[in-house]
Image (cartoon, rainbow, N blue to C red; front, side, top):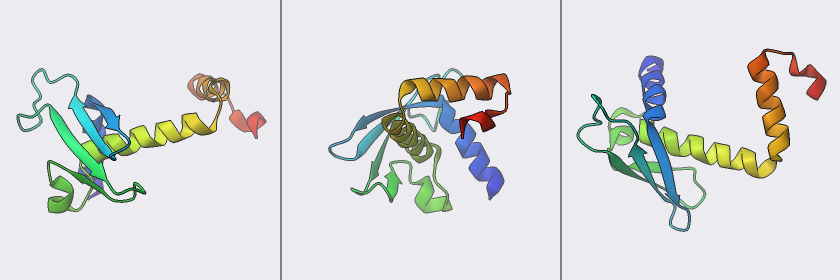
Length: 110
């Protein structure tokens, strides 16, 4: 089960998320589909309930397999990034990112 989830998470990186927040509908678009085609489609619709706790996707893999599909994972990742950017100023995020990329010990930041 973990291996299957890991593959879906990896494959979600080939998609971009365009949201329509008032309707809680999201367009998940395949960016580079060279030799890779996601079952012939390049765009999927993902929806959620108003509190963004339940998601559903046009591909129906979540309903079929019981784990979130790559399209739902992309939407959840985008929502998480949006939440982080709303909570923290850009300079703090860039500082933490540069510390993490340099491999330094971020314990000074606590």
